[in-house]
Length: 314
Image (tube, rainbow, N blue to C red; front, side, top):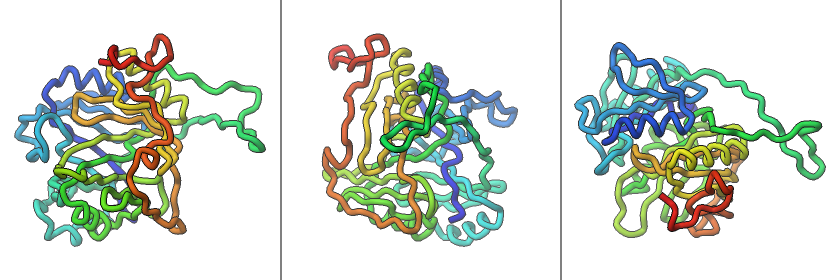
């Protein structure tokens, strides 16, 4: 499929200084202000960007929920030819327009989407192996310890949706996304490419009073050690943990979610399943055990390395 992954996320926020600090503490690199926008912009190692706007900015499309939240999400495609093909596919969608060399439309959940040729760069990192029974990858060297995470890219986003069937149909039929797994009558995991990580987007319909909204944005890191190091660093900077560290059995990923002043949560994750055309999507009932094999509510305290007591959690 021509869509590679998430290129940019633009947030409308209420407290710009707090959001800027959050992004730096999270491990994103601040870019030099542009002469065109002069907005606070941050990037991952691959060049995927997070842009902060005042939520009242006229440059932003209408919000699909109250308060600070994601207002526009950009997806990268692999070539100008692919972008031309997408133009024909999306021409009759609500909100469709061309802005410079990019395309824009609304998905059925009210999220503004943009599409352009990907500008992300290849990232080459040393990632030390793990030692398992019969499979020794690391010899005469210790595993790393991280003082702060450095997110590699934006791996996926999770939305609350009002109409799961309609939103799933849009991403699969119009954009070519693949179903990876499903929670029956509740949610679906979709990946942008046939061969790729477990999901690029996760759509969740609440069983009572379905609503639109942002749940979280997830950033890939090297390994579980960086998940832990990143989470502890955020705790040290007084950012509260939503849940983590933990592990999702449905994607195999290790995670740590931190509450974000931009709305929703930001997640560090690693070790998600890599799927191909041979994968057969599973249909599971949503439950505590199907969502988390294990997880620590409230996180770990950076000083004691023990679980944060609920009465002390901020």
